[in-house]
Image (tube, rainbow, N blue to C red; front, side):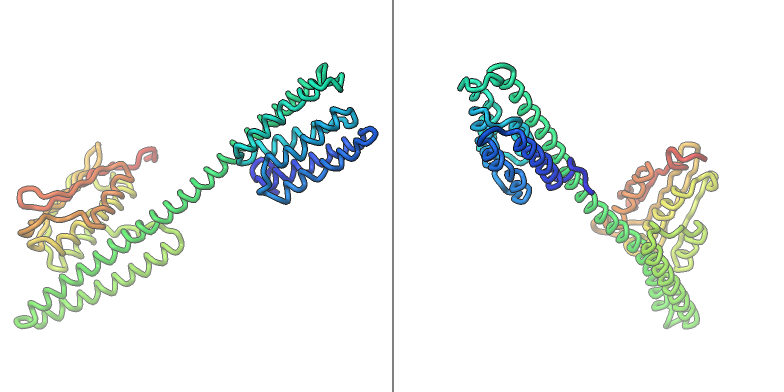
Length: 365
């Protein structure tokens, strides 16, 4: 069952039960024709519970009018307890100017009985006691209203966070599929291009290139199926292949790679190695698609401060490379583990650089 202070309907329902019980108590202690006043008040909070859009001023008028009449003629007792509950209900609701006016009038209504001089109890402590009770009811209702506003804001924030999470998940899936499919088909295209050039002069070598294209294409399809299966079960990404195996794939496709690795790669933790493979795979795929020649220089330096990877290739004549989905995804992934990333032209070459930590901060060695 929801808490009375977290659900508006439950709060009003609880107030209706309490107020009706106090109304019955008032009915028991009435004098002479005071029972008529008590009966008139009795259904007010029940009607409010059944009628969510009931104006607050109407509820207060329904409760306060009979109470003032009954106390002025000293034929009812304790009816103001029901009015205090009604004050809390109105204060907790979305109030209009008419509601606020009615609340102020209700707050000072005990002093009207004091001014009429018909009740010695009100002339003494009574008016001040009921004024304080109504003020407490108003304050309690205000606190409940603030809590309802915070609950509504929390729900809106939760919905916004859910939308952001869905969007980020879609972007992650798009990046993973872009990297996986782009890598495989770039290598296939390299093999196909080589086979097309070799068909007139070396049919055997062209056939071998086509076989390699077929093998890479099948492997790419297998990786795609595995990736989709892992995504379906909640895994964020595929584990990376070994560095030598990744570079060998591009070399077999006809790409010339000048690779220099300095430092101990075994000192690099798993998460930075995964991002390193992402940087190399995306950079080499872009070389295959955009570079002037299928040549690239790769430098990897591991030291006590972290890991630096630099991939450069010759620029094609014309406009420099843009920052597409792949590079934007790399920037996001490198930043996610506390690294830095940049891609820019330099001295006629396109340079991709990433600085990665050797291990994630806060993760023990």
